[in-house]
Image 1: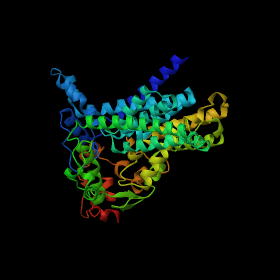
Image 2: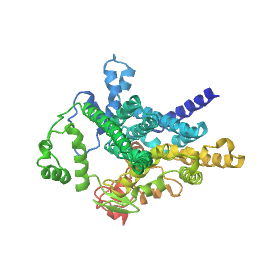
Image 3: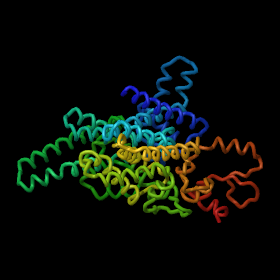
Image 4: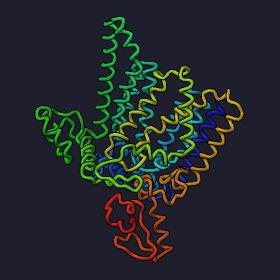
Length: 501
């Protein structure tokens, strides 16, 4: 029986991979893909210092996207070598990591709630349009989502079973996450909060019983493991950036943003201390902060309103409402309701805390302390955790009556139809709360809708309609073609004001 289970797993993963491959065929590179690929290639060439001006998101992990090109260099001239050298091939690396992520969604859900739950979570993953969309791109969103999820899984294993081997696996994955995307630094806060929730009853009991030696021993264990995780992370961060000017004092950095300049100037003594970090690692947050301060990243946009440099509180809640399939939203809400009703049958501090503490902390951060709001992709790390938890809905699948099973099947069918109806345009997916798809730009834009992925379709349209006027910046009459981001004013909003008004 178990053999059939694993065959079914492989079939779903193969179907997901096929969907990703065929849906990306005619999609042009998005705004950031060539930058990520270029930096990844420079890392492989031994140069971590070549940061691209204005893009503070570039990280060493994208060297994996350029790895096929490096492998191709070792081969004789052939069609296969040309395939490996093609930048488009780098997209397949991201797809493979999406399959790895899908597997761990299945694995974690299965270990928590059983095989039916594992498959349920996997199917929800396979038909999550936002995950599909970014699984096909040379960016770091899926890499970060994958590594953060797997890091939390192995942290759960480490806390549950203990041992230095599991600690090493967990610490290594957390360290690798730090060279994938800067938001992964939140893992440290998440893990600290999980430990507090997990062990606070033991600590409170020790305080009540005045077991000072026990409390000191627990504190010693926590400190020892925390230092171990820190050392491993520092080594991996430095290795990822090729130890580029490691131990440079803060005073010798050339920062662009006021935020980092203030830190540099107000910490005169501390600024002389050599930092155990590579210089490019801090240049990224500085670039990002500078973009936020100057508005160079573009305007935040929601419901027809643009803001810069201010952002919209709760932006990602709205993005979630309109861009996550309604069926998935219902499944998650039902799983929360069922969990609360049967709360005593679960063990939150030992299991679900590893899902919900990261979900809550990450959601609070991106919704209430944002610096950039350019797409739902920034919230992707919580998606796998929500889908894993949704598996709890099927924990007692064997006891479900026929009517309940049919209801779940119908809701899954609705999910499949909704998602496939957008093929191959998954980046611009909006659910049925937006009945007229042409009007989606009135709700959200930027990488929620248009990120440069449809330039080939645009060229085909202009070839078929040669009289169409492309991106006019002054009032014109006739058939006008304009990108959604230009129309709503993500960049240079004055150019298309005449069209909006």
